Length: 424
Image (tube, rainbow, N blue to C red):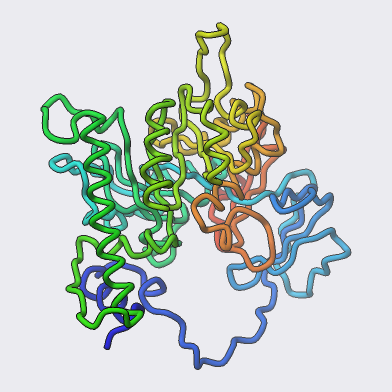
């Protein structure tokens, strides 16, 4: 009898010829635990912003085996002999930025436009690690992106959570599938007249496809729990709905405007009980902040940053309006290449210009984005045990006069203006 793990392994072997082995094969529980790694790099900076607590003046970050081993004040964190010490006495250190909505992780053929729902499609086969767009993104401090299909259809397929640095596929992929991409209204609308060309039809085909996936997952869950004896047939088109309906990965939703976000909340959360990320949330959608907050839904707003409110004749900062209404899990996105990936911090800068506070803006492009994507155990803050993705810059990243000096991904320096051409 195949349990869930063995089914996933079988499926991965059949379908994922290029999926990183670390994702397909679990750790051997019988193996002896490895000895504690010894620090190999010590990064000392004038100010360390952790996104997990108060800033640390004259801070030290110890790195061992691609992970952060310790973070603290110099003197309280001892730098062992033999460490490679990287000293930036007049600079800031902070977590690598996390982008919640990007299309520049590989090739640009990210839309199949025949059918409105495509749950059989995935994009990690299209990844090009450390491509030219990602090299410049690193110079802007971006170390993790949510690389997703386009919004030409209502359900474009499955996206990948990945690093922007160099290496093989297994080096850069954090999670695949990492998200499901759904797009409601706007881009998927058609003039051809097929079902799904307008908003009524689009809501229908999204709901229908999710219900099909939900029933498939329920059948397998019942079989594996022993509630039914007949083994369901494996349907490769629907396999990735398993982690989705087990709430192990979120839906990133191209949704904006008051009425469209209402449909998102009703269908995807209230009816389907899915974890979602509102990945635009622009125009007047901030007026639904109270309903968003009730459901603990993260909002990664953008790339449009403002809205002209006709009722009072004022220009509103969209992120600031969510914040005023109590939205805590809040960030920004570039929808790269709509806005260049390296300008993610500028999106936060503009949100601050319109009324968001700087501390939350920094959290919004680091830990809050990581939480929204369900990878905050790996990235988003400088804490022991997390990936050593560290950005060194001349000052606060919210001030556009500052710039990135050096970037570490998984503990390795991947960009250094002392050696590399300054790219941004």
